[in-house]
Image (cartoon, rainbow, N blue to C red; front, side):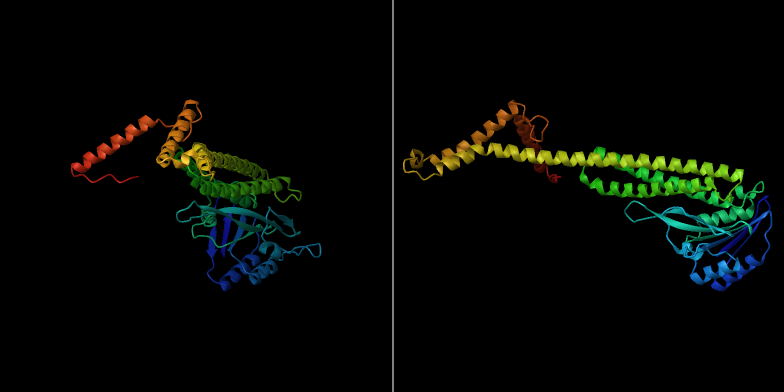
Length: 386
């Protein structure tokens, strides 16, 4: 648990942290007993919280239970996983949630994007904000922001800022931190595109699909932030009725829309790459089928001769020829070469894997054979086949 008390007129604030459960409970009691000041905002931040501590917090701050019997309590809402931004008002306080993105490095793979939930309890009369999130790194967004608040150098420390300005600042920070991650995924797609130009293949399918999944998660995050901003702007209960706060939220909403557009652009790039992979795969399949078809056509004469001379009729003059077997072996390549020449002259082999010039191909192979023989004669090691 960490506790920050900052001034809205730029004066330095104070910060304290707890390293044990007893210290956390002591901080909660001290904050609950202190009187609210018009120029001070208090922020309690928990990196993970258990049920007994949460119950004590609600009791010490006299947070009202839900007015409708059977509705979710504040404790229950904090422990739940919310798919969409939630805002609940309990008379004495408001509960709301938002998401922040986290980057996880995977060895030999693209970074994974995860979204963690942050729950807030806003008590207007006490000018108090309580935030609860999962365990974070030492240098997290919350740690950095706490230092700015204590030093009096953030937007929350200027011109008597509204207490809820802290919520807008956190939303803005979460969105800003998402842009570098989106650009990193975009750079990865750029590398894949260049790699496909030099060497096509179906191996690009999996990394591109993984990248698209991470971008989809980021797009979902931006949509959730946008919905949260719309909830702030509606402000049916007049909890956030401050012009500076509303102006800031409008800027955050535009940033979330920009992030959504960036994600859409890169998702479209992913789909374009996947289409190229699909085209390559289809072309490769078609080439394989074409080659098999040509081979089948070239083998038709041999199949015909085999079937004809394989019939055991009594009166078949060819069966008595002493050179009939050699005639059969001579006819097979003759017919195959003849069919190949006819197909090539007819243009059926143009722009296909079998569109080769036999004379040029033979000359090239002979030249390579002579060069290799000359190299061997000079004592050089033979070139390894690729």
